[in-house]
Image (cartoon, rainbow, N blue to C red; front, side, top):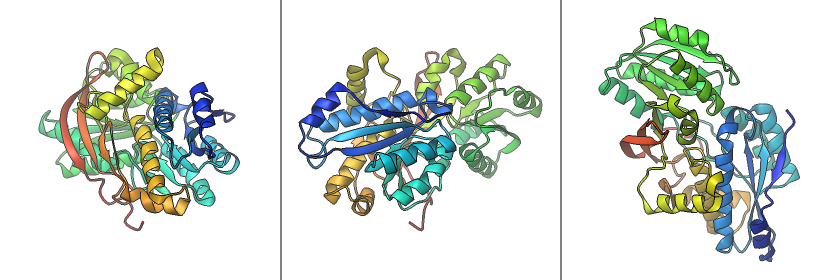
Length: 382
């Protein structure tokens, strides 16, 4: 699929840029506008647009406006190589801030290193991706898996788990951690199956679930489209076991309709967070996008916050020089919809986590919360 590059051309952005004397600071956003992540990518772009608009309205960063350069990475490695190369070497962006699949991230990292630009990764992922230029403001397995497993074993009496994932770094990485945690907690894994990242026929795997004797299911797919197809087929087959989804976000859950009901998820963001910052964020999103608004979620909100974290680092450094910004990033924080975020633990962030269950209308009811969960030992050599 040919990579599409889209440059933000909002009239308001053009007007704001014209009011600044200095050249813009360019933020590269490679994201899956096509492919598996196309279900959630529009919400990520909206979150980035709001952050840039808000910052520019208050004078930009060091007297310079922010400008988005958005490129389609097609949700995979080949598309990411093209998108990163275009953004880093042709558009000459100052930073990459992006929600991507792990395959896309891994393909883009060598280009980030070669071009020497900061990279803030805003997608939850399988953990332990370590690069001097890479910072992460989203969750890792150590933060996300325990709330689901502990609930299933401790409160729902589950003992035998069936694991289903997409066959790539995220799917396998998450379920490897989940399996170890389940066994440590006294449970057993009675089945573990995978489909390719673009797979959509889960029939054979669901048959294995039904004959396995499992009393709970935990899934870790590529997010977006695979979540939709797997959940729909599970429901249509009559499987009613407790279902924990390690990759679903609130926006995707709403797009599933009735199929998503009762799914358990663990997230660092849900729209129901009761804080002044989250209420202000949701109000601003509604005002800006109106009927076009995509549900803010655990993939889009970290994108919004990451742009503010980059702003804070540039201001602390006093420049956009990569070395100075990378030095500043662990020392800055931003209080946004998820609370205070700082990527100070080996380039990762302690996060408050929420165990939620999807309701009839696709919204998420918070079952429990866990404050400032440590990301664990991710990149000790950085």
